Length: 305
Ligand code: GLU
Image 1 (spheres, helix red, strand yellow):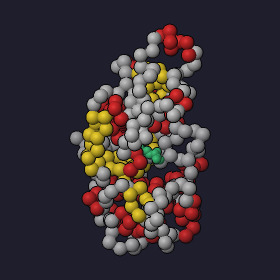
Image 2 (image 1 turned 120 degrees about the vertical axis):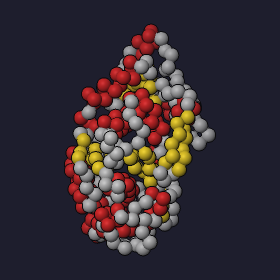
Image 3 (image 1 turned 60 degrees about the vertical axis):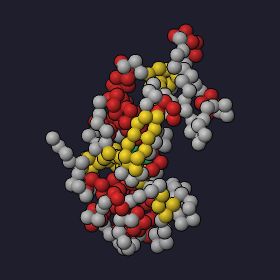
Image 4 (image 1 turned 45 degrees about the horizontal axis):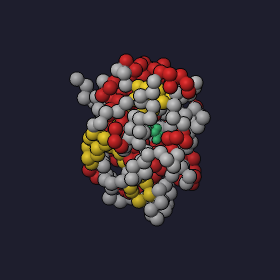
Protein backbone atom coordinates (compact mmCIF):
# COMPACT_ATOMS: atom_id res chain seq x y z
CA UNK A 1 0.00 0.00 0.00
CA UNK A 2 1.29 3.45 -0.92
CA UNK A 3 1.35 5.62 2.18
CA UNK A 4 3.05 8.60 0.55
CA UNK A 5 1.06 11.72 1.39
CA UNK A 6 -0.51 13.58 -1.51
CA UNK A 7 -1.29 17.27 -1.09
CA UNK A 8 -2.68 19.85 -3.45
CA UNK A 9 -2.78 23.48 -4.45
CA UNK A 10 -6.29 24.30 -5.66
CA UNK A 11 -6.19 27.97 -6.57
CA UNK A 12 -8.94 29.88 -8.34
CA UNK A 13 -7.21 31.70 -11.21
CA UNK A 14 -9.23 34.91 -10.85
CA UNK A 15 -6.40 37.32 -10.15
CA UNK A 16 -2.97 37.62 -8.71
CA UNK A 17 -2.18 35.57 -5.56
CA UNK A 18 -2.51 37.66 -2.42
CA UNK A 19 -0.79 37.01 0.89
CA UNK A 20 -3.54 34.70 2.16
CA UNK A 21 -3.21 32.50 -0.93
CA UNK A 22 0.56 32.47 -0.58
CA UNK A 23 0.28 31.42 3.06
CA UNK A 24 -2.20 28.60 2.32
CA UNK A 25 -0.06 27.37 -0.59
CA UNK A 26 3.10 27.47 1.54
CA UNK A 27 1.46 25.47 4.33
CA UNK A 28 0.04 22.91 1.90
CA UNK A 29 3.48 22.49 0.35
CA UNK A 30 5.29 22.23 3.70
CA UNK A 31 2.78 19.75 5.06
CA UNK A 32 3.51 17.15 2.38
CA UNK A 33 7.06 18.02 1.34
CA UNK A 34 8.26 17.81 4.96
CA UNK A 35 7.14 14.16 4.80
CA UNK A 36 8.47 13.44 1.31
CA UNK A 37 4.99 13.58 -0.19
CA UNK A 38 3.66 14.51 -3.59
CA UNK A 39 2.07 17.82 -4.62
CA UNK A 40 -0.71 18.23 -7.18
CA UNK A 41 -1.83 21.49 -8.80
CA UNK A 42 -5.42 22.02 -9.95
CA UNK A 43 -6.99 25.16 -11.35
CA UNK A 44 -10.46 25.74 -9.90
CA UNK A 45 -11.98 27.65 -12.78
CA UNK A 46 -15.66 26.62 -12.58
CA UNK A 47 -16.54 30.30 -12.66
CA UNK A 48 -15.51 30.97 -16.23
CA UNK A 49 -16.61 34.62 -15.99
CA UNK A 50 -14.02 35.46 -13.33
CA UNK A 51 -11.17 33.11 -14.24
CA UNK A 52 -8.79 32.97 -17.18
CA UNK A 53 -5.97 30.95 -18.67
CA UNK A 54 -3.75 33.99 -18.37
CA UNK A 55 -4.31 34.18 -14.60
CA UNK A 56 -3.57 30.43 -14.43
CA UNK A 57 -0.30 30.95 -16.30
CA UNK A 58 0.76 33.75 -13.94
CA UNK A 59 -0.21 31.62 -10.94
CA UNK A 60 2.11 28.81 -12.04
CA UNK A 61 4.85 31.34 -12.50
CA UNK A 62 4.22 32.81 -9.02
CA UNK A 63 4.38 29.34 -7.44
CA UNK A 64 7.68 28.76 -9.18
CA UNK A 65 9.02 32.14 -7.96
CA UNK A 66 8.02 31.14 -4.40
CA UNK A 67 9.87 27.82 -4.78
CA UNK A 68 6.65 25.84 -4.30
CA UNK A 69 7.00 23.06 -6.83
CA UNK A 70 4.53 20.33 -7.72
CA UNK A 71 4.72 16.92 -9.36
CA UNK A 72 1.71 17.10 -11.64
CA UNK A 73 -1.16 19.32 -12.71
CA UNK A 74 -4.59 17.74 -13.13
CA UNK A 75 -7.04 19.13 -15.72
CA UNK A 76 -8.81 22.38 -14.78
CA UNK A 77 -12.36 22.04 -13.47
CA UNK A 78 -13.83 23.85 -16.48
CA UNK A 79 -12.82 20.85 -18.62
CA UNK A 80 -14.23 18.18 -16.35
CA UNK A 81 -17.98 18.50 -16.61
CA UNK A 82 -18.35 15.09 -18.31
CA UNK A 83 -16.55 13.50 -15.35
CA UNK A 84 -18.76 15.39 -12.89
CA UNK A 85 -21.78 14.13 -14.89
CA UNK A 86 -20.81 10.57 -13.96
CA UNK A 87 -20.70 11.35 -10.26
CA UNK A 88 -23.93 13.30 -10.49
CA UNK A 89 -25.52 10.17 -12.02
CA UNK A 90 -24.33 8.14 -9.02
CA UNK A 91 -26.30 10.49 -6.77
CA UNK A 92 -29.31 10.17 -9.03
CA UNK A 93 -29.07 6.34 -8.98
CA UNK A 94 -29.06 6.46 -5.20
CA UNK A 95 -32.28 8.48 -5.36
CA UNK A 96 -30.66 11.34 -3.48
CA UNK A 97 -31.11 14.29 -5.80
CA UNK A 98 -34.11 16.37 -6.71
CA UNK A 99 -34.77 19.47 -8.78
CA UNK A 100 -35.07 22.80 -6.98
CA UNK A 101 -36.85 25.79 -8.50
CA UNK A 102 -36.34 28.27 -5.66
CA UNK A 103 -35.24 31.69 -6.83
CA UNK A 104 -32.36 33.62 -5.34
CA UNK A 105 -34.70 36.03 -3.59
CA UNK A 106 -36.76 33.17 -2.12
CA UNK A 107 -33.57 31.61 -0.80
CA UNK A 108 -31.87 34.69 0.54
CA UNK A 109 -34.66 37.19 1.04
CA UNK A 110 -35.66 38.62 4.42
CA UNK A 111 -38.16 35.82 5.03
CA UNK A 112 -35.67 33.02 4.36
CA UNK A 113 -34.90 30.85 7.41
CA UNK A 114 -31.57 31.56 9.06
CA UNK A 115 -29.85 30.19 12.16
CA UNK A 116 -29.08 32.64 14.95
CA UNK A 117 -25.54 33.15 13.60
CA UNK A 118 -26.96 34.19 10.21
CA UNK A 119 -26.25 30.87 8.49
CA UNK A 120 -28.83 29.99 5.89
CA UNK A 121 -30.35 26.49 6.09
CA UNK A 122 -32.25 25.26 3.05
CA UNK A 123 -35.63 24.14 4.41
CA UNK A 124 -36.31 21.47 1.76
CA UNK A 125 -38.94 23.55 -0.05
CA UNK A 126 -38.68 21.59 -3.33
CA UNK A 127 -38.01 18.14 -1.84
CA UNK A 128 -41.45 16.72 -2.35
CA UNK A 129 -42.89 18.54 -5.36
CA UNK A 130 -45.07 16.40 -7.62
CA UNK A 131 -44.15 15.86 -11.27
CA UNK A 132 -47.00 18.20 -12.25
CA UNK A 133 -45.71 20.95 -9.93
CA UNK A 134 -42.21 20.55 -11.37
CA UNK A 135 -43.45 20.74 -14.94
CA UNK A 136 -45.48 23.86 -14.15
CA UNK A 137 -42.31 25.88 -13.48
CA UNK A 138 -41.38 25.49 -17.14
CA UNK A 139 -37.70 26.21 -16.61
CA UNK A 140 -34.47 24.41 -15.86
CA UNK A 141 -33.97 23.63 -12.16
CA UNK A 142 -30.91 23.48 -9.93
CA UNK A 143 -30.31 20.01 -8.46
CA UNK A 144 -29.88 19.34 -4.76
CA UNK A 145 -28.61 16.32 -2.85
CA UNK A 146 -30.54 15.29 0.26
CA UNK A 147 -28.50 15.36 3.44
CA UNK A 148 -29.22 13.12 6.43
CA UNK A 149 -29.79 14.25 10.01
CA UNK A 150 -26.35 13.17 11.14
CA UNK A 151 -23.27 14.82 12.57
CA UNK A 152 -19.97 14.75 10.70
CA UNK A 153 -16.99 15.11 12.98
CA UNK A 154 -13.38 15.74 12.19
CA UNK A 155 -10.23 16.70 14.02
CA UNK A 156 -8.67 19.48 12.04
CA UNK A 157 -4.88 19.58 12.36
CA UNK A 158 -4.99 23.31 13.16
CA UNK A 159 -8.50 24.06 14.39
CA UNK A 160 -9.01 20.91 16.47
CA UNK A 161 -12.37 19.13 16.80
CA UNK A 162 -15.14 20.36 14.51
CA UNK A 163 -18.62 18.97 13.92
CA UNK A 164 -21.54 19.84 11.69
CA UNK A 165 -25.00 18.37 11.34
CA UNK A 166 -25.74 18.84 7.66
CA UNK A 167 -29.53 18.58 7.93
CA UNK A 168 -29.77 21.10 10.78
CA UNK A 169 -26.95 23.46 9.92
CA UNK A 170 -26.82 23.39 6.14
CA UNK A 171 -29.79 21.69 4.49
CA UNK A 172 -29.90 19.88 1.15
CA UNK A 173 -26.98 21.11 -0.96
CA UNK A 174 -27.00 22.32 -4.56
CA UNK A 175 -24.84 20.05 -6.72
CA UNK A 176 -25.61 21.48 -10.15
CA UNK A 177 -26.88 24.95 -10.88
CA UNK A 178 -29.77 25.71 -13.21
CA UNK A 179 -27.27 26.75 -15.91
CA UNK A 180 -25.74 23.26 -15.78
CA UNK A 181 -22.53 24.28 -13.96
CA UNK A 182 -21.46 21.96 -11.15
CA UNK A 183 -20.73 23.53 -7.78
CA UNK A 184 -17.47 23.72 -5.88
CA UNK A 185 -18.40 21.03 -3.29
CA UNK A 186 -19.00 18.35 -5.92
CA UNK A 187 -16.02 19.29 -8.12
CA UNK A 188 -13.56 19.44 -5.21
CA UNK A 189 -14.69 16.11 -3.78
CA UNK A 190 -14.38 14.38 -7.16
CA UNK A 191 -11.05 16.00 -8.04
CA UNK A 192 -9.40 15.38 -4.66
CA UNK A 193 -10.75 11.83 -4.60
CA UNK A 194 -9.58 10.95 -8.11
CA UNK A 195 -6.15 12.52 -7.54
CA UNK A 196 -5.72 10.43 -4.36
CA UNK A 197 -5.31 13.52 -2.16
CA UNK A 198 -4.61 12.52 1.45
CA UNK A 199 -4.03 15.99 2.95
CA UNK A 200 -6.28 19.00 2.34
CA UNK A 201 -4.68 22.24 3.53
CA UNK A 202 -6.53 25.50 2.86
CA UNK A 203 -7.85 28.67 4.48
CA UNK A 204 -9.95 28.66 7.64
CA UNK A 205 -12.87 30.16 5.68
CA UNK A 206 -13.44 26.71 4.14
CA UNK A 207 -13.66 24.76 7.42
CA UNK A 208 -17.43 24.28 7.19
CA UNK A 209 -16.95 22.81 3.70
CA UNK A 210 -15.06 19.83 5.16
CA UNK A 211 -18.15 18.00 6.55
CA UNK A 212 -20.02 18.72 3.32
CA UNK A 213 -17.19 17.15 1.34
CA UNK A 214 -16.91 14.23 3.81
CA UNK A 215 -20.55 13.39 3.14
CA UNK A 216 -19.94 13.40 -0.63
CA UNK A 217 -16.76 11.34 -0.18
CA UNK A 218 -18.86 8.67 1.54
CA UNK A 219 -21.42 8.68 -1.27
CA UNK A 220 -18.74 8.43 -3.97
CA UNK A 221 -16.60 5.87 -2.12
CA UNK A 222 -13.52 8.03 -1.52
CA UNK A 223 -11.55 7.86 1.75
CA UNK A 224 -11.57 10.98 3.95
CA UNK A 225 -8.36 13.04 3.73
CA UNK A 226 -6.75 14.73 6.74
CA UNK A 227 -7.80 18.38 7.02
CA UNK A 228 -5.80 21.43 8.08
CA UNK A 229 -7.55 24.80 7.84
CA UNK A 230 -4.94 27.48 8.25
CA UNK A 231 -5.60 30.79 10.01
CA UNK A 232 -6.64 33.91 8.14
CA UNK A 233 -4.10 36.69 7.97
CA UNK A 234 -4.97 39.93 9.75
CA UNK A 235 -3.30 43.31 9.63
CA UNK A 236 -1.99 44.51 13.03
CA UNK A 237 -5.21 46.56 13.44
CA UNK A 238 -7.28 43.35 13.20
CA UNK A 239 -8.51 43.98 9.67
CA UNK A 240 -8.56 40.89 7.46
CA UNK A 241 -6.02 41.10 4.64
CA UNK A 242 -7.77 40.40 1.41
CA UNK A 243 -7.67 40.65 -2.34
CA UNK A 244 -8.55 44.32 -2.00
CA UNK A 245 -5.11 45.06 -0.52
CA UNK A 246 -3.59 45.39 -3.95
CA UNK A 247 -0.18 46.38 -2.67
CA UNK A 248 0.04 42.95 -1.02
CA UNK A 249 -0.62 40.86 -4.11
CA UNK A 250 2.30 39.12 -5.74
CA UNK A 251 2.29 41.47 -8.72
CA UNK A 252 3.31 44.28 -6.37
CA UNK A 253 5.23 42.27 -3.74
CA UNK A 254 7.53 40.74 -6.32
CA UNK A 255 8.75 44.23 -7.23
CA UNK A 256 9.89 44.87 -3.64
CA UNK A 257 10.82 41.63 -1.83
CA UNK A 258 12.60 38.34 -2.39
CA UNK A 259 10.68 35.06 -2.08
CA UNK A 260 12.81 34.22 0.97
CA UNK A 261 11.89 37.51 2.71
CA UNK A 262 8.21 36.91 2.06
CA UNK A 263 8.31 33.29 3.22
CA UNK A 264 10.32 34.30 6.31
CA UNK A 265 7.72 36.93 7.26
CA UNK A 266 4.84 34.46 6.89
CA UNK A 267 6.69 31.65 8.69
CA UNK A 268 7.52 33.91 11.63
CA UNK A 269 3.94 35.18 11.92
CA UNK A 270 2.69 31.57 11.87
CA UNK A 271 5.10 30.52 14.64
CA UNK A 272 7.21 28.21 12.47
CA UNK A 273 10.45 30.10 13.12
CA UNK A 274 11.56 32.19 16.13
CA UNK A 275 12.88 35.19 14.22
CA UNK A 276 11.69 37.01 11.15
CA UNK A 277 14.53 36.13 8.83
CA UNK A 278 14.63 35.31 5.11
CA UNK A 279 14.28 31.58 4.48
CA UNK A 280 13.43 29.41 1.48
CA UNK A 281 10.46 27.03 1.45
CA UNK A 282 12.85 24.11 1.19
CA UNK A 283 14.84 25.16 4.27
CA UNK A 284 11.62 25.76 6.16
CA UNK A 285 10.43 22.20 5.50
CA UNK A 286 12.85 21.01 8.20
CA UNK A 287 11.17 23.33 10.76
CA UNK A 288 7.62 22.40 9.92
CA UNK A 289 5.22 20.96 12.53
CA UNK A 290 1.46 21.45 12.63
CA UNK A 291 1.44 21.90 16.41
CA UNK A 292 3.33 25.18 15.98
CA UNK A 293 0.42 26.64 14.00
CA UNK A 294 -2.78 27.37 15.92
CA UNK A 295 -5.90 29.41 15.81
CA UNK A 296 -8.33 31.20 13.60
CA UNK A 297 -6.18 34.17 12.70
CA UNK A 298 -2.61 35.38 12.52
CA UNK A 299 -1.52 38.99 12.89
CA UNK A 300 0.92 39.83 10.16
CA UNK A 301 3.29 42.73 10.46
CA UNK A 302 3.53 43.91 6.87
CA UNK A 303 6.27 46.47 7.64
CA UNK A 304 9.15 45.66 5.39
CA UNK A 305 7.00 43.91 2.79
N1 GLU B 1 -10.26 27.25 -4.97
C1 GLU B 1 -10.37 27.64 -3.59
C2 GLU B 1 -9.69 28.97 -3.38
O1 GLU B 1 -8.90 29.39 -4.20
C3 GLU B 1 -9.75 26.62 -2.66
C4 GLU B 1 -10.58 25.42 -2.55
C5 GLU B 1 -10.01 24.32 -1.71
O2 GLU B 1 -8.83 24.39 -1.33
O3 GLU B 1 -10.74 23.36 -1.43
O4 GLU B 1 -9.95 29.60 -2.39
